[in-house]
Length: 172
Ligand SMILES: [Zn+2]
Image 1 (cartoon, rainbow, N blue to C red):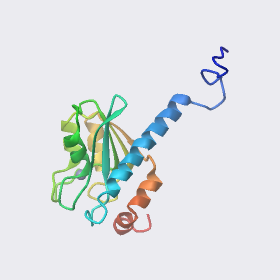
Image 2: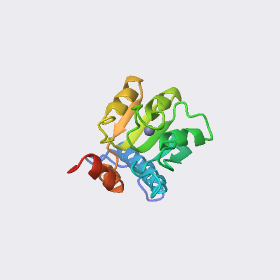
Image 3: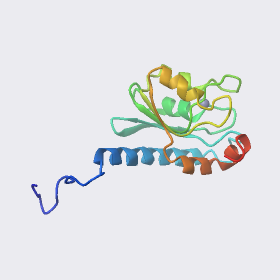
Image 4: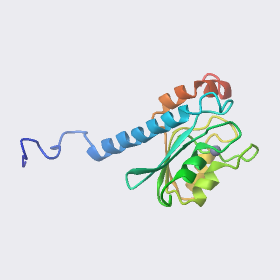
């Protein structure tokens, strides 16, 4: 085992330590935490909607951020895509709540917009408990060939929107 400056340059074969996986997990959590921070900026103005933030990452750097600012106005995902400083094609979108897919509301649904813009991966914290969405947003994205990861900091996401979760799915 070569040693540089007294530091072992890579983990020797320690059992059950998967460094790439660990790095990926921490990086996903970091961007979801940023979504929480952005989401919190909508406090007091989005009710009865949930607090939602979104971050777009390309080549390891944030190229766009957005949040749901006001009830009846654009959702976080749409704002993040519109605020991006680079083309979002092939980028990863992080969002604390599942992108919506239902049309009987004030704004057009986010999932089709994400698909149209060529996002290749979507990483979320919580599935939307609203029965109109409840996994259908994820299905729509997957059908379009987008890789979807669900459940990053799920507990923290639920506590950020505890009022919303309690109202929509009591006891959950
Ligand atoms: Zn939406």
